Length: 229
Length: 240
Image 1 (cartoon, one colour):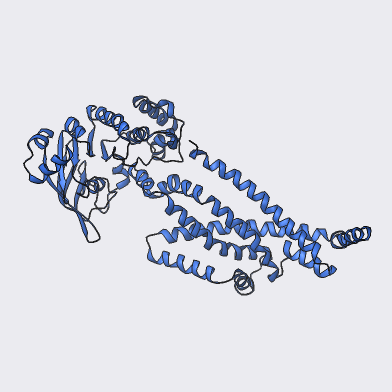
Image 2 (tube, one colour):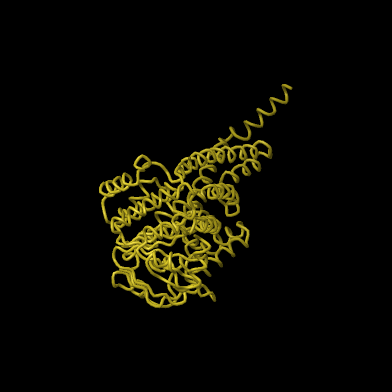
């Protein structure tokens, strides 16, 4: 019993304390967070634009939206990441994490656009008619009447997409970025000890997402206050 | 105030309106009756361009609303519309529902709009519901709020598209009473309804539609007691 415990402590020391290896996880966590955050912002902006394209009257814009979502959905995100990093942005002098965020944002945008499109279509047509009949313009009606209701409807799916996106950034190691996942992997290679670093990585991801889930559900409750009878 | 000339409307191959001519003068209460699918709702929705006419002309105050360059939004501000399913904005309070359009369209500042809203709510007896959300109201209350919302824009014309058809029977009265008040105040109204009592009592003119055309029109007395057309007689015999 005593020797088993001692070996666990020794391994823990080797994995996280020696050479300040825990700092790898801390920095990796930072990279994961900054990459995910920027990607979410890019994804939402692209998603809104593509959703408006998909719902527009112009055939050409609808076509662009369809081709975009088709390509993104039809290829693995790691392939997209590598193409964007090694081909499209190969000669662009931007920090690695920003290029990675752009890649994830472009990927997420396709899914977000589908969520937003569905959300806008889910708002009863009578709402638009009521807005327009009062003399509001199409864009005022969209902004004041349709989108706020759509946001409420799509909020859970959007949160889910954000969580998927955070976990998806675990593939940035493919383009040489030291995120949380890669940090765990690095410690594993350096120490020949797989269990502790990988479990630590998992626990950090889990905790992050658990906290976000709790925050999201608070916001959702707030959004639903007009549904309370 | 409203002038409709040779109005046609088709949905794909289905021709719903087959040439409607209609004049509505200031202060008139025109009640449109007829069987389901006769085109009544399509007609009233063409008046404020919620449906775009396939052919023909619709004039509001002498301006053609279905002209290519018409400022539809501006012309809609003159016409309030009340829907069968109320279409209150569920994410806004009653107060916000009523004040949204006047504020957004620069008709009033927030304080003025809220004053008007309070006056309207007092008039319909729902001032205590100002801070409630639509989901907390009964059907009759919702429809009265929807009428107040339309009135807050100070419209010259009010369009009612089957305003009591989605209500529980015991709530029909409160909405019709409000509409009667409105008619008495001199509001120009076009009302699509199945409430024959209302048509008879409040209407200055009754229009019977069937199959996409106006079959017969006249004063309530003429239509309800001495309809000339066979189709009118047969419809009335079923609903009265």
